[in-house]
Length: 68
Image (cartoon, rainbow, N blue to C red; front, side, top):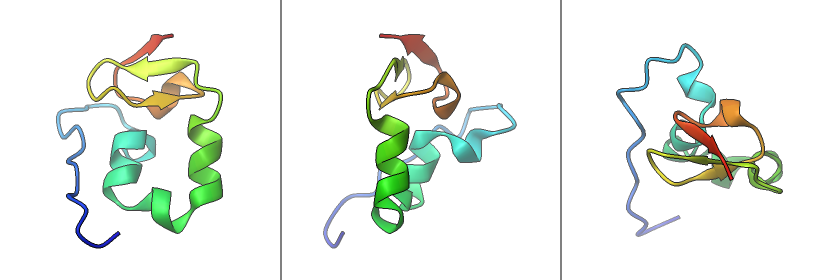
């Protein structure tokens, strides 16, 4: 989206699947290019990231998940 500031992702995450975390996906623009898939990841959220505050359905979509 034009004029939107791009939020950084957690560059300190040492998880081998960081490229599947919401912060990384959003940084790469996944939420614009693949709206339905992104919505499925966040809809009916059960977990919150203690780092960025994003919420997700599954804990493996976040760097530092905590149950809601």
